[in-house]
Length: 111
Image (cartoon, rainbow, N blue to C red; front, top):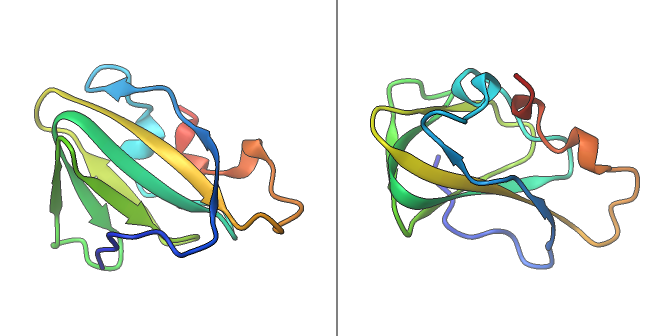
């Protein structure tokens, strides 16, 4: 499943710092998901990485510099880093989604 566009009406809530092959949290390299009601957009600034949805583990999508991957809520996924890369993750949600705070955007951001 590849999504190129975020659904209409979402607002950017926060972004991670820019990660590289050395600073990417271990949790992003193993199965994790975005919180209920929150959509993520992985944006690659330099290099490329592999992106995998856990329901299709043999379908590794290469996301290169200037490209992005939209990640729906609660859909398990992980990244594969095989070369130098710089990327960040944006978190978006509907403006009326109360009860979603910054600490629950993604379980994959903690080491």
